[in-house]
Amino acid sequence: MAKTGSVLQTGQGVLRTEARALTLMADTMPADFEAVVTLMLGVKGRVIVSGIGKSGHIGRKISSTLASTGTPSSFVHAAEASHGDLGMITREDVCLLISNSGETPELRDITLHTRRFSIPMVAISSRPDSTLMQAADYRLALPEAPEACTVGMAPTTSTTLTLALGDALAVALMEARNFLVEDFHIFHPGGKLGAQMSTVAQLMHGAQEVPVVAADTSMSETLLVMTSKGFGIAGVLTGGRLTGVISDGDLRRKMDHLMSHTAGEVASVNPVTVSPDLLAAQALALMNERKIGALFVVDDDDRPLGILHIHDCLRAGVA
Image (cartoon, rainbow, N blue to C red; front, side, top):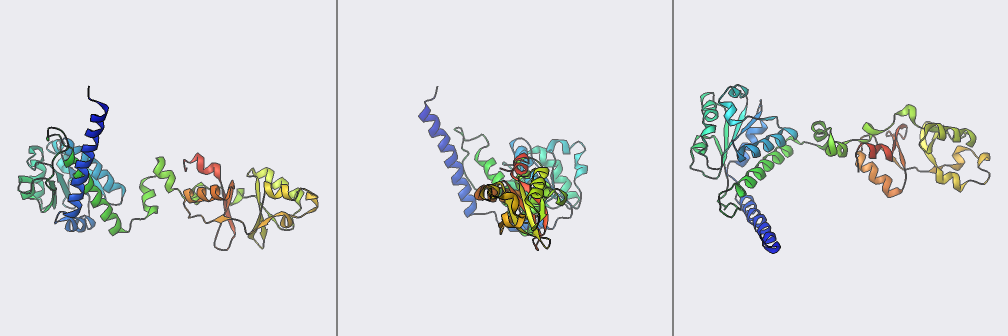
């Protein structure tokens, strides 16, 4: 059994080997990189990604990343393509074929299909002189770098480089498209990412649920509003605009002769508010910072649109 120190050193060695290869690729980017970004940016159809074995696994991830960041993409299994799935590839598409050796026989039929129908083809390979690279219209050659495994044969460094190159393409395309946070949320409505991308408008309670009273409202009536709405807070309106907020803390501070006051006299002025298009994560951070449990959501004229409670954020997974 390997010693703990030896195991740790092996792990560190793998990471350092792959890190050096990534740095090398960053310093010597494939010559066709910019041309490929331009090509994919203008594609009318989709970016079809294909590969077999480990290259296929990496290809699926690249295709998924492209699709989720604004570049329509699909993965076509190289072997399945030879049995009917070539019909998924149209003249409007671009093909991105991945093979570390550049001699993968399963890619032959897709390669011939792209040549027959003049479909632009991009190849990723470690061997610039390989059959696949020679057939391609655009070549993304990986730098010469050793695999990180002890026998120098298992796909390790090469798959890391390919995956990173796919990420570089996706991010370059995102920037070229001016792909924004709002766009990202469209493709990630579920899970943690979806929650983090949620806006206040998507989580807030609507105007009919907002606990608000006029500034001259008696405190007895104000307390009824606060209790019935269930947020532990009430907004004070002057001319339809939110000018103050009454919280539990305000009630305690004015406890003496509380019922003789009006809402406007008890409220704290200049309340903390948010706009409906603010990210819910930012609103939650603001509530934590100010140690408050709810925020009024207002328009540009400080008119209430809704209310966001900290529990709404937590239930949605914003944390």
